Length: 178
Image 1 (cartoon, rainbow, N blue to C red):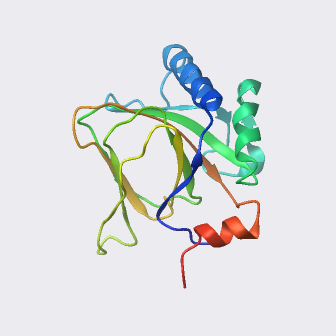
Image 2 (cartoon, rainbow, N blue to C red):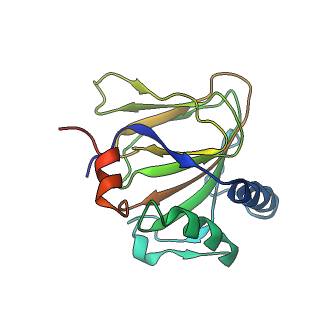
């Protein structure tokens, strides 16, 4: 299934946002970033098989995250490869290969970073609006993509892969038009 390149999915309840910000701060202080860059860092919150991105091999490192799983179960069938990220302005995440699954992003602060997406190396750039704190967004990273920081505001983010929406109505709403 091909999804829209970018779409607002839902409002995220305050208790989920508070929980994610709390966990972000703890994990940032207690875990080593999985990618080692000074400008962009990620922390994984599930034990996973990174090579295959297999949703059946994921287990939460911290069972408290069930609150996130429970909330998003009204939208997607399975959360996997859940991570936090921090993009320090003015750094960018450069163009990189498409991933197997789309992602849902939950900004943990307001910032002006945007995704830039391309269907192919020679195609036009699709630029997303900046994501707003309090919302969750579908980003189709099955396309070539990068994240561009527009000014000096650091970007805090939580995001996860998913395999399917839970209802035909949601699939229809977020799929690409023929």
